[in-house]
Length: 68
Image (cartoon, rainbow, N blue to C red; front, side):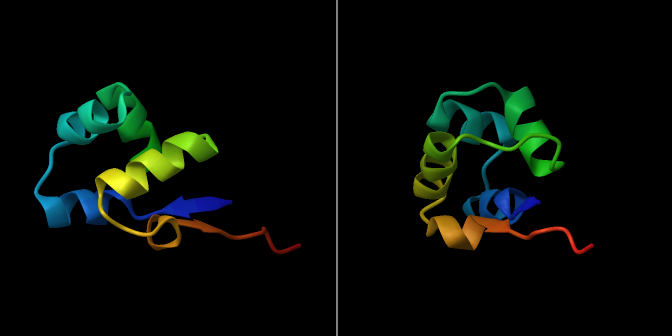
């Protein structure tokens, strides 16, 4: 499972969802889905988001395997 801290990064920059969406070239709805963990970004989009938020990708996205 891929967890993210997009909302935290966005809050630190005082950006709206639309501002982040514009910065990375996606719709606001995509940012909503990402923040709600309903959508996993491509690797390219993940890097774009981390770069826009001025964070390392590992500070924004974290992969965890499900425990059986």
